Image 1 (cartoon, rainbow, N blue to C red):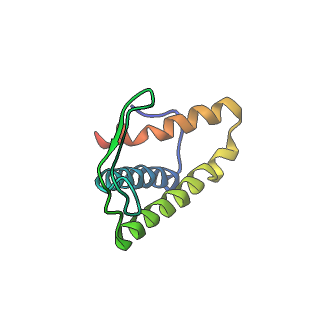
Image 2 (image 1 turned 90 degrees about the vertical axis):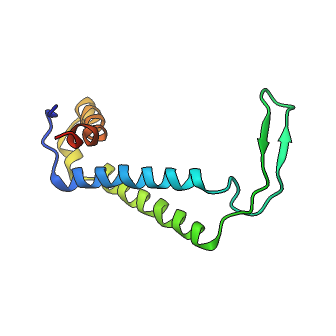
Length: 112
């Protein structure tokens, strides 16, 4: 499905890379231990739901560096996409609608 907006190719590429970096960061964080530093496990059932965590060996320096690299790139891309000159060509609700469409272009373009 085509969007009614003629997004510049650099904006589309930036948004696509942003999706990729966020997916990569999310997958990495799911694989890593729950705590950055080594901590003992715990169990707490005093709240509205029980919370349990096994002991965490912490993250290695390489893992910390990889997370930092991905977070930095995510930030750079978010600033690039949100501050792109394309948005200055639109006003108010059109900008909101276009931004929403841009966020979902990756799903539509993969099938083409």
